[in-house]
Image 1 (cartoon, rainbow, N blue to C red):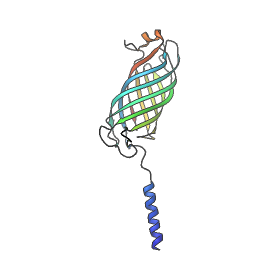
Image 2: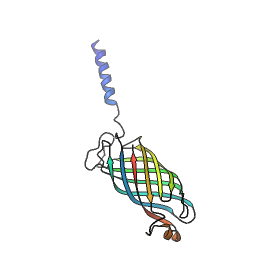
Image 3: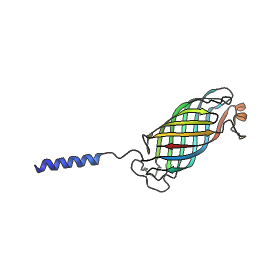
Image 4: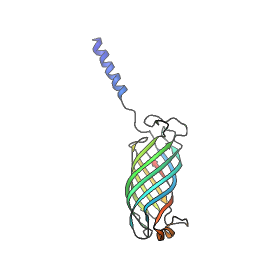
Length: 190
């Protein structure tokens, strides 16, 4: 009678030890982002399909999770986005994003521990849901890393049609298309 009770207790303990840790951080986070948007083959006057890639630098975050994140770097790529310099309604598209988190010296908790000195990284499946003038509204779901399973939303504003920089449509479209332009934006998870 003692042996079955001991085995039962051992089985329960083994199950408790085998339970996986949560794969995402609890709570939510909001971050600012800015960098360059790259277009391939290049935005011209006539509408054509483009590969659009956002490469952000480190942006500040407001963290309501258990990670202690102070900043993040967003990169995203979308294929088959119809764009032109003349259109005010840009295309939609699907792609992937990567977010590299900086915990500012804080030690990340379960599901977010970096290995070999690497920073915690999230992968996101994203879509451009709506565009108007320079602004793209994006959404998706975190598929890997911190915040896995949580909803991602963002607004990215690319200076494609405005300003006097070298990346604007007014100048670039005449010389093989606009290949790059600055962007600013924000995104949230949770």
